Image (cartoon, rainbow, N blue to C red; front, side, top):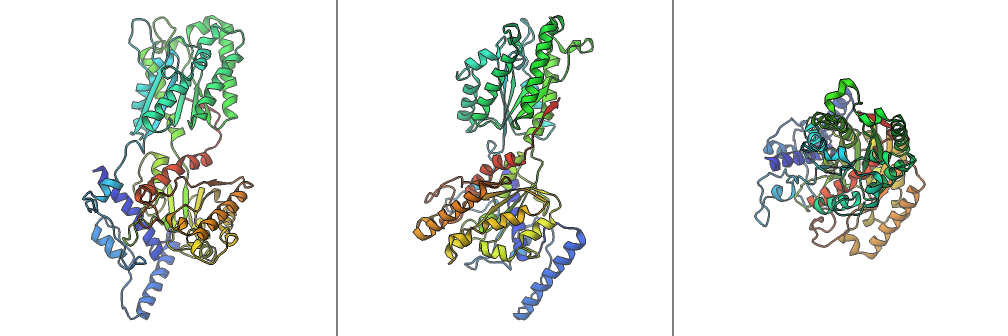
Length: 531
């Protein structure tokens, strides 16, 4: 069932691109404007058909889940080899007898999962008292996150009763105890570091230091260790409340100072979030603490997990809008001649949101327009084209575009254009950034390919273009460059048999590699977050 659902979604994305190319659907805009442009496109196609003596009737597409109906709508568009574009069915067999969807479009739970590591002292361990079983808040956190639609989330935790932040930093590389050691094991187990680390430490240090500033030094060191290991965000939990803080005013003052300094540190670092402890030590909260009043009760640990859930969801969820513009590598052309389109856009959306998108004709988290065969020159000449122009797309977008991704130049390599002319890719970025609706652009290198390797002239031209664009990007605060994330390998898993386009796996890989860069461009500085 999961395979069928994702196959249907991919098919729907492919249909959208083809419909754009045919001129049947115009992205975005108000209903009246869309209707006018759609009628104009239909009339143009009708006139062309009549001029050729075909006498065909061009009709606007009707919503349908039927494969035959989709193929009927696509029957007028053919590949360069004269093959009609075809919607791939879930049970279509390929050469080895395995269905294409079961091999290439199946949902991989690890690919779309989010990962959280909780690390710290007795709070993370779930300590109550000597007689009680530990009840880590991480268990409750996983349950609570389901209410936010994060079903595919993996949470691991390590907590050490009585450990100070100083001890944690000393043993950070230990494979069994340390934070770095835990992240390394996470990479070994899941092929990536956790997206988020929740770090609680420092409470125990207050009874062993003469200067509370030392606590912050250890917290900052561990936080930087995690970020250097590839963790996207570190959540620093306030020092826990307890009866000991109430009885010792000096220690309570120190704890408040550490929490304040920690908050300032987070405000200066967009990868760090300071989390206020969700409840105080008060008479009304007595049930949230253990009988000895030193630790949290089982109910307190549950409440902490519940309180962290919306904060983690906020820092995992992607609330922005992305638009991908380019040639056939954006459209998702794969095996030559079969008409199958599998764009990287839905895989990017899956990596950003944790969910492979349910197709909508407009208004996806990640929208795209890919134009097979188009060169950079053609895109620049068509900036204001009513159906395919970059300006027109930006104008009709119903919301601001947080990140606009441009990948083009491959088709230019086969023309007489010089590297300097192809580097007019820069102009596409300048045009996009000239709109108040676009915040950032992302320039993807002209990808490697077998076609490039077979022609030293094309390969050298591509290298020159990539360098020219890269040199320009370095001076642009609102543009980032992506060095293409995978190399060309003949018969490699990421490459189609024509040695030029990507395979379904390749488009998926590209979408996943883009996600952390898009997140980084989108995110804004966050200061104190209250649970």
